[in-house]
Image (cartoon, rainbow, N blue to C red; front, top):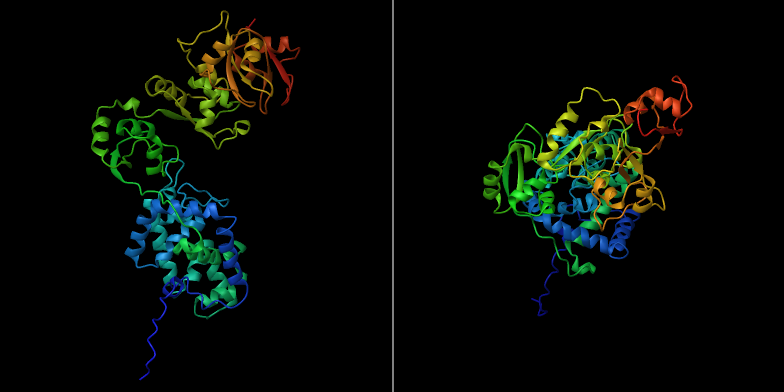
Length: 481
């Protein structure tokens, strides 16, 4: 028997313990270089970005870990949302995949998730996480225990992976090594997906060892679940629950427009401990005050300014409520969220929604606000698009108004500024010029501004049958003549 002291065996590395990270199957060459390149990037130039991803993961780690344990899946799969979305529930890819787990809409609907313009459960980690991990478990079984084929199929779809296997390896048993042998036959993004995941999981499993010490993980969200019976906006929920609206949005990312559907009960989340208080307050809330905005379907000829005038709000409010809509490219039929006071505006919104015609001139339906000062002799309201170099003073002068009146008509505070492209609602008795848009006719413009078609033609030297073209300037007389 040897007198040499026994030497303790080294502890197994995470790679040796995890079936996804075990790299002994990888042939020398490109794959290790790709993994190393991603690791170099995330511990170098992309260090701040990767730190943020790992810190965000802290918010959702208990949820994901619990589902992984329930399904008996490798713990390293929690790093999949790191490379899919940076652990951002509302992430949208260039291919229109959505959410932390980046589901395409048909796949999500196939699993039973709700995907509409109002509710998108792909954005809801509490709903999407079980579906995503059950999908991965099914793919793992489908490919006879090959996690690398399963991950490739998660990224590009099992149909595409199946076609590659049938064409280039008919009859071969699925395996990790087969994935690497056929990797070049897959789409470019999928070819890099598994190396990218391995790099993220290796760093994430030992961030301190890779120079990412001092992480401050985001705290998990605690909540109560409550049911609202009809359309309710999150700002109302926040007020009744005495909670910050941003917190409500984090708890309910599935509500795309911050509004529950009308006519159906909806389960929503409120901060922990506020459920009973919210329910009690909600029961006393008049139904007409459950929603503080409405949706408006854009009609022919309408701009942000026309919609703002119709509902009596600022153009800037319309822009803030619709950040993904380019004000210069509003399309007929597009839906705009209109922030509006709960009680005073609902009757108007209902009337707009029930209007029998989608013709132009709808802005004339807006009722005057009795609290808004108006210059003497006003006959109509117009929409002015701010250009470079203009100020409230120059615009007010142009329309024979005061700066305070322009601020009042557009709900512009003393500290607010205007920018080129903003649309302002102005009330004036002066003649103004209108720039013709696609689809405009003389009669349509006359209807919009409340003048007779014959008078509009006369002051512009046109015949009643004259063809006008986009870009033409039409003078609008101050009165119908």
